[in-house]
Amino acid sequence: CFNAGSSGEKCDFETDLCKALHESNLQPGWIQRNGRSGMGPPYSDHNGNDSAYFLSLSPEMRSSSATLRTNVFLPTDKEHVCQITFHYWISQMSGTLVVGLQKLSEDTITNIWQVSGELQNQWKANTITINSTEKYEV
Image (cartoon, rainbow, N blue to C red; front, side, top):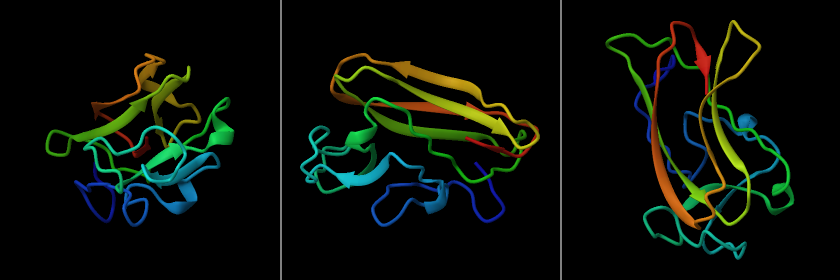
């Protein structure tokens, strides 16, 4: 995904929220933690590293929703395709994880992917491809 300053960024949350996400976009309910935090599963990242950081819903948000937004990305075309690969934890809690796309010219968010409570306590991965003729956020 491309924005005015960079492309192809990898985000690991070790030191900050990476260039795709800004601190101001970390809405209430999200925390940066690792498996050693004492907060319960997951006890490691998707590679099994218990000291690696990831984003997690804070315990007080388990029954409500929280939003995380990217920076604004430039439109896609044949030479500039946007693919976002992310890892997510499916826990024994019920809920839905939704990925949405909002074009800057629109007020609505279009759901482009979602998964609901599979009750599995494991990391999974997904890659989404985004096509947009306008600037957008995910």
